[in-house]
Amino acid sequence: METHFSFTKPLLENLPALAPGERVIYHDTHKNAAGLQLRATTTAKTFFVQKRVNGAPQRVTLGRFPDMTIEQARKQAAVAAASIANGANPRAEKKRRKLESKTLREVMADYLEARKNLKPLTKADIEKSLNEVCPEWMDKPLTRITPDAVKKRHQDHGEQRSQARANLAMRYLRALFNFAAAEYQDDSGKPLIDINPVKKLSQIKAWYRVDRRQTVIKSHELGAWVNAVLDLPGPDIRDYFLTVLLTGMRRTEALELMWRDVDMTAQTFTVRDPKNRQDHTLPMSDYLLELFARRKAAAASDFVFADAKGRRISNFRRAQAAVTKATGISFCIHDLRRTFATVAESLDIPAYALKRLLNHANGADVTAGYIVANVERLRDPMQKITDYVLKAAGVKETAEVIPLRKMG
Image (tube, rainbow, N blue to C red):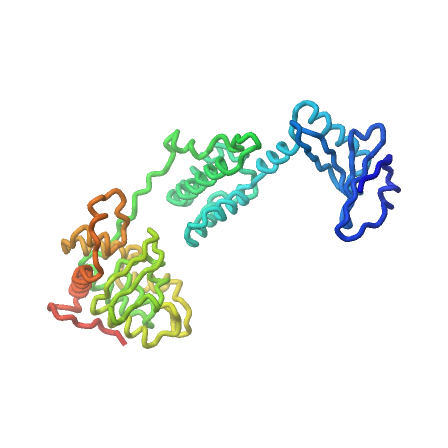
């Protein structure tokens, strides 16, 4: 339904009542109307102008009555009509303005939604890093983040706090800009982001050189470290530390290990959806078999490493501090994986077997692609690593397997 009359405030305030779902278009016939119209529904009265752009009808929403007065609406209608007459595309301009106003927080949300294959921890780290390094930018339009601002923020955080975290946050920011350039385009297909400001760090060689951490528990330290771990109160974190050391699993891989993926009969366990997305099955050494059997008998959760109340273990800082205080050995969980790899290499375990134990991607290694490392073929290397650690720890002196103390 449409009707024409010269808009006045009383007339618009007293328009006929509408039924649910009904919509009426009113045309302003005032001499200064410039094509002004009003769309009335049961919930709102909205001013707009509708013109043809390149043969297609384009609607420009101006505002709602009575928040926008009739006089204001007529002026805005005239501006919109003149803009269209000069070749502008109001819908395209509105889209551009909306995209240009996208904040870093909004772009990050779009990015995380689009990258469904990212692991939850990676998504959490992206949010954490950007909120840590550039919190003032989170509600700032992405288009207003300049190369000079990136350079300064990277430099300030690196000098005042952490060079590694400064690098990481800027790598994440670079990914968001690349995403925005590909995802946000105007009607002509032109990207709204035409420059990635993080490129400046490469152009001026400003990235911090952060050497990869290489710390391991040395052979002569294993005895003190293992015995300090065995002295920890309660079996849960103790078992977790020893399992990571004796399997080379990543921190979260061990934490997320579930009983349904532990085969006590076959004496194997499977890590699901690890870093390289390839499920990873490993054999248990004899010590690990005993450890898993004991934990299984007392299990109160679907997760292998949970406490007596079924809660997955967490907060290792106190246990790490206790071991460090007793031994003088400072370590992080990933150091245990590096120690496993170092021990394996010292035992001359074949490179392909070591890759399989650590579940490293083969990448461009064509030969490795033809080698299928059967789980049983990994059992002997796994046992050798366990034996070495036990002997280095001073709790195994012969080839016979002697259970570590405090197994109960």
